[in-house]
Length: 149
Image (cartoon, rainbow, N blue to C red; front, side, top):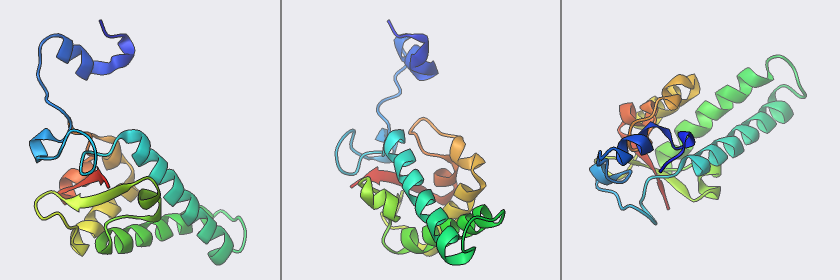
C-alpha cells in the first residue's frame, strides 16, 4: 500500500495501470548508462551550473553584487547551455553528475535543438511540466532527453 507521498503515478499503478518504466517508449534502458536521468541528479547539475554562472556574472561582469547580477547570470547560463550542450552534449554540472543530453532520434543534439532547449529552460515554466518519462516540456519540444552517462 503506497502513501499519499507516492503521487498519482504510484496510485494509478496500484490500481492496475501499466506505465512501464521511464524511457521505455523512447527505447532507453531501465537502469544504468543511457537510462533516463533522475530528478535529483538533474537538479544537482542545474544548481552547479547556475552557481557557476552567478560566480562568472558576479566576478567578471558586474564586479560584485548589483541588481543586474542575476540578469547577467541568466545570460551566461543561456550561452553556456547553448555552446556546451550543442557541442559536447553536457554542461559542467551535467558532466559532474554523470549526465548527457542526447537527441531522441539522432543521439546528438544539433545546435538549433540546443538553442531551443536552453531558451525554454531559461523560461523555467517549460522545465516544470514533465511527461510520464520525466522529460520536461523543454526536452519534448527540442526532441531531446537527458540520460545517464
